Image (cartoon, rainbow, N blue to C red):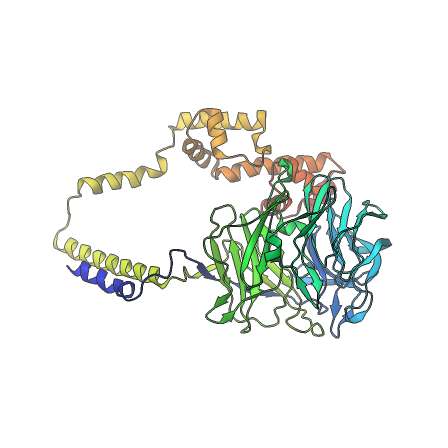
Length: 564
């Protein structure tokens, strides 16, 4: 009777107000850490990870003045170096060899006036810049991407004079074809080894407007009606194609996920596969308001393919920062809204994903191009770093949980009182069964010691003879099917004999294979090493490698060669 009363008390809010809907939005507190400030306050800069280091290049500083400088983050501080040319809203492309970064274009003068031709190459080993030539057209707000043949496709311009041009990977730029519509800061996304699409908003009437025309490097332009309604977020112009990529190049899968906004201010994510555009179904609408006010999203989304999530960063007028996380491998995709405490000097600029799965925001502005920030913020979006605060925005679920907690407390207290009256209570048949299950649950699929050792030997022989770990989509069930045993048996055996999970076991083989390639080859690109070793993408390769060795692949390779 008492339990029933407690349940009814917990249910009062449910009876007083019906649920608003059957979808839930998770909400969690996000830890934000301010790193060392850059030497120079800057906005309009490019930012990237290259050679295992976070690097910012160019942009404009206080007073909207161009700055021909760069900085790289190492040892917990920023190291300033000089560039050959200033690149304010220029383009940067980290080449697949991991040692060179192409930088080109940008505004010609202070205050965002004009466009530049100049191009230079950044060497991540020597931390030096070499000016070497000019682009085919002077450009600002352009984008570039390296194709599989080592050439870089460039498109986009701030005010007309657009077109496709190609950098040969060495010194030369050449015009490829004109475009039917010029775009400011377009998306340039490969859809094949030698082909790419270009799309995005156009700059008209002092604002960005939707454009439904999509250009192709090879092929005729085509229209996507969805882009007439949903405009990709491109207000921050220093994004990279890799940030939107969620496919698998090794399998010929060129899939992307980008954030977009419609004319009503609603947010969504556009899923792009080849030339097919569609909205990603989500478990609830992307939040645009909270109890503190409206969320303003001003930068492109960033995908973490290892966690199967994409992130979108926004701010409000109170000084809070928000990160929307969408788990895109589930349909509908679950949505989580992370929020910080009040932050100062947080700029609206494109975040960069770290090897640990966190986001870094460098410099940027709020509303004034004349007063950029030097601040650098690390947002701990890695799934082990977030602190749960509010599991859901649904207060109805909260009351149910509270009611359940009260019932559980009452049950525990009652049980202790009963145990005080009687030393032992006979277990029911169901309780005995449950106890037995709990005691044996972790061992139910574990064979006897001898057979487990024999199975482990079979697993190892399979690894060393057929190298299944080189398949980036390898699953536990694949190994189990090959050996003719249950997947849980394989998992339990690896855990018992190797002291690790299946994923850790497979990654260990991939890392050893990658280390072998690093030592045996001299000209293989880091991206290729990762792909050849079975990693799904370069980011996953770098993250796993550093977690295991404490070094980037390049640092490890250099260290090993010094020992020889």
